[in-house]
Image 1 (cartoon, helix red, strand yellow):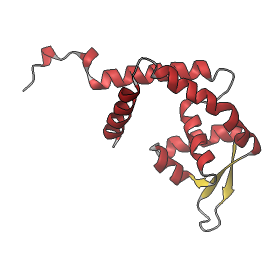
Image 2: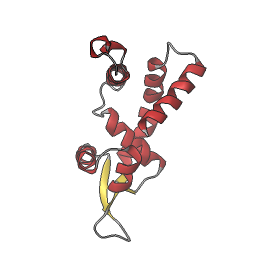
Image 3: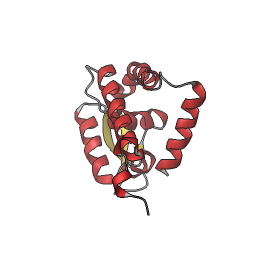
Image 4: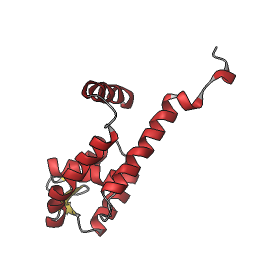
Length: 142
């Protein structure tokens, strides 16, 4: 059994992931200044730019965000005039989440900023390291 006194929290995977996430959020906040969009909301917009009209359940599954949290995120995007909830043609209990014209127009504005966030976040890494990091993070999240 591992010695609990020899556990270095600052070198633990959880601690390092949390600190990397905090740094990513700080960079995101700097780059997206002036836009009232969180990283999670940006992620939902990204999914909708790829396939508009997804249901809340589909967005939840793709983003791996629980349905309750998803409802709040969609509410805020709707208040900002970026999405609307529309009826689903095959399931009256489900709503399709559709981009408004404003939501669609944000793609051209926000995508370059997202690329800048990614570049700043990975600026100290070599291209091969970035690819390895992406693969390792993908393994951890599954």
